[in-house]
Image (cartoon, rainbow, N blue to C red; front, side, top):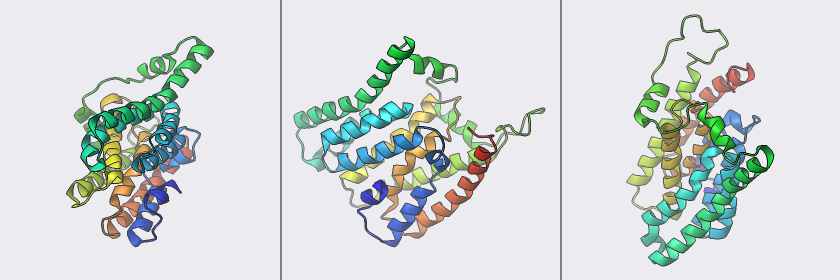
Length: 269
């Protein structure tokens, strides 16, 4: 429903193809799994829709949900100032007004993260409990190029690896390559467009940030769960010929079938 709202609820072939791609987007198994990724995606879509319509306070409240639900969601606080910096002239705002709105909206987004920290402090006595857990999995600054190669280049199964191991399975790599292709097409189409509205700019900033951040911060983490957070990028494909998002949707369906199989066989978590 939120994607359809962002597509202006117009039943064109391109919009319907974009909607199909959204339904089958890489990582879509986590819309149904017991993970907070779907909640983060829903909040992010609402955040983008409200922000593009100038609903600054409402957007900040919506953005607090992804910031509380999933680690990467806090990036929404950075989306606002970057978007205003890029599109301030198009929005017709003076610097002082833009700064005030950025602080208000980003501050409301940060409330979601602060609420989680307060809850952790109350429950386990450590406000940084999540960070301590993530540190065990290698979260930190990494070379994004090295992370990209690690996920894009096939690796043989190590000798003695159990048959039910995720190591050596091609589906996560296919998903990584597919989502990379979707992002490149979406960003390229937006930059090449003669006209870009406020929605295009904010989704563009969101897409770039949410694609780069896991490559930098999650060098040793699985990338496939965070791919679903790039679902809003389908909005940037709406001006392309319908065959482009349609072909991407078919490819996404093939990858989703493989990833769902790994999930239901307890190989993927």
